[in-house]
Structures are given as structure tokens and as C-alpha cells.
Amino acid sequence: MADQALLVAVGLSVGLLLLLGLMVYYLWRRKKKKKGRSQYEELLSTAPSVPACTAPVILVSKESWTRPSEIPFTLPPRFTSQNHADPKNEEEKEDKEEEMKMEAQRPLAHRGSLSVRMWYPVGTVLAGLYSSPPLNEVVAPPPGMATRLCFSVEYRHSTEQLMVSLLRLANLPPRFHGNVTLIEIRLLPDDRRPRQAKARGTGPDPEFNDCFVFQVSGVCVPQSTLSVCVLSVGQDGKRHAVGRVLFPLEGELAGAGRVLWRDLETEDDTQCSELGDVQISLSYSPSLQRLSVVVPRARGLQLLTEAGVCVQVSLQIHTQVVKMKRSCVANSENDPCFDHRTTFKLRSQHLDEACLRFELQQPNPVRSEPPALLGVLVLGPFMYAKGPQLQHWMDMVNTPQEPVQLWHKLRRAT
Image (cartoon, rainbow, N blue to C red; front, side, top):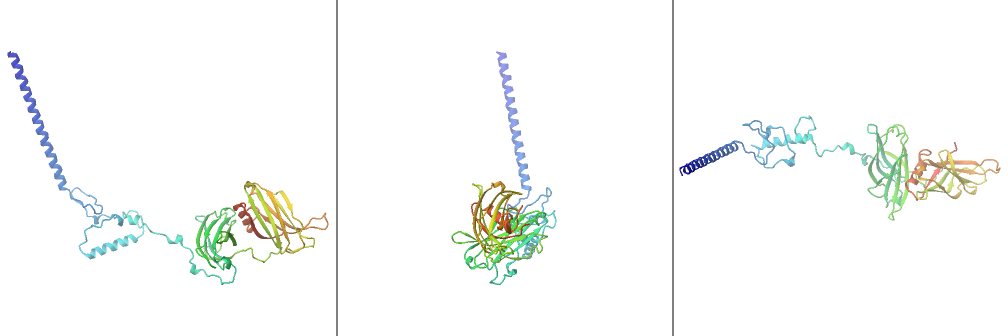
């Protein structure tokens, strides 16, 4: 019994010691938490309060703070707050506003500035890049003259860019005054798809004020020709050809950037060439791979005999004659009517390699002798033709299944 009482006494003493230790530990932890919280509140109370809507403030040291005006840093107007404290007097406020205006107008002077408005001058436009010759300086030709096109051409060697500005037309024929005027511009011989400009009004002198940029190397510029075709679109949607201007880019583009006037070459011109003119109509069907040729008539021919006139059409690929056809002999007149129609089989991949050769001939009474040659005309890509002859071929390629009819001048055989 004595042993049991001793064990119970020892157990109770150990339990009391453990309980006492837990109470001491709890009190120590509580005291430590209160001490840390008081230190935290003390630190918060010593730090200065920063307003919510002020300019950026930078902490320099633990106990010293700088004013916003002492820091070379500004924000764009849309980020600044409207609740700033007013200056002491109105003069200081006006001085600061003048400084801000001068700083905003100042160019990028140095790269070390922290001013956002000096680093990023948003809204500034270089007007020189978009300037065009003002229309009030363009003197229009007097009425009654031929239809003329006003434009300017400039080549920039540093960027290899050809700048073409279309300004206006003058003396448009009266039948086109109420229609919409369009201009199709190409840089031959490379461009197949024309770039189009639409007039901003109607009447005899429609205005355009459009600029086109062509990327072309300086080596290819002398070999290029600027083609400008003027079209008139009626209320029914049909296009009527007014005329065209072919401007060869030869030499160093003398007078580059100046305003130029050029007369439109029209189909109504009655002035014939030295050997005469011939009218040709071309159309090509990509699906059928067929080239259709029509020779309606000729004018102003210089006949050598009274044996009549015929036209011979030959299709050539490089130097090889693929097929040749000859019309019937028309009456011996200076303006004969042939109405000769023929077709050739031509694949699409050969359009850049083939050409058409037209020869106007007078049969020789002696069959053993060759016919007398009145003139020659060649229509084809840039390998064979240039000027109106090249333009006619390109128009045929760009408008498939639509006939393109033009007058061409005959040349002597070489």
C-alpha cells in the first residue's frame, strides 16, 4: 500500500510540473507577440504617408524624401492627376505651364532625358513625305486644245523608288463630262495588273491627287515606260477609252519632280503616219488557249501599184514562224477594208515568248517575184515591242476573252 501511495504522489508532482511549464511557455509567447506588434505599429507610424494621386515619388534615404518637382521625370498628360496642390501664387503656375509647353515642343535633344514627351513625340507628322504639287500652281491649258494629263515623276536613287503623282486632266471631251473618270497606270514591261485611280469629281477638268510608288532598280529605269490609260465609265457601267500617255523613263529623268503636261493619244486622231496606219483587234481565251486576231481596215497607205492590197499575219515564237495566214486582196485604195479574221493556237506559258507580225503587201503581177512590202507592224511582249505595240499586247493579256482594238503606225521593214 505504501508503494502505491508513493507512486501516486510522484505522478501528481510530475503532472503539476508539466502544467506549470506549459503556463510559463504560453505567457512567454503572448508577451513576445505583443512586443512584435507594437514594433510594427511604431514603424508604420514613422513612415510618411504618400497621397494616392500624385506624381511618382522616389525614396532617396530612410529618413529623407524628395519633392516631385526635384525629380527629372514627367508623365504624359493623360496619366497626371488633376488634384495636385496649387502653387503658392499664379505666377509660379504660369511659369511651370510655359516650361512644359517649351519642353513638349523641343525635339529629341539628348538620350539621357527621362521625359516621356521628349522620348515619344506622339502625333508629330513629317508633312514633307506626303506633300504634292499644289493645284493652284498648275496652270491649265486653254480650252479647245487636246485632252492633256498633268502628272509628275520622280526617282529616288537611295530607296530605288519611282514616285508618280497623278494631278488632273484638262479639256476632257464633252461626251465624258458626266461620267466617272478612271486612270490605269502601269510600269512596262513588268507590270501586268494596272493600278487604278478614280477622279474626285466630274466635268471637263477632273482632279485626282493620287500618288503611286513603284519599286524598281536604277538599272531597269532607262528600259521602263510609264503607261497611263484614261477611261470613262458611263451610267451603264461600260468603259470607254479616252486616250493614253506613254512616258519613257530614259536618261536620268530630266525635270524630275516638276509638273508635266502630256497630250493624250486617242483613237480619233486622223493624222496618219508616213506609211499609213492599220487597225488591229486582239483577244485571248485562256480556257481554249486561242488567240483571235482581226484586221478590220487600214488608212493612209502609200500604194506602189494598182494590184490591190492584202495583209499577212504570222505567229512567231522567238525566231521560228509557227503559223502564217494571208487575207484576200482588197481593192487598190488608200483606205482599204480587209475585215480579216484568224485564230492561232497559243498556250498561256508562251504569251511572253510569242509575237504577231503584220505585213501589208501588194501582189506582184509576176508570180515569181515577191510581193511589194508597204509596211510592217509587230505586236508582242517586251522582247519584241515597246510603246503602244507593247501596251496593246499587255491589255490583251490582262483582259482575257475581251477584244482590244487599236490603231498602229506602220514601219519600214528592217
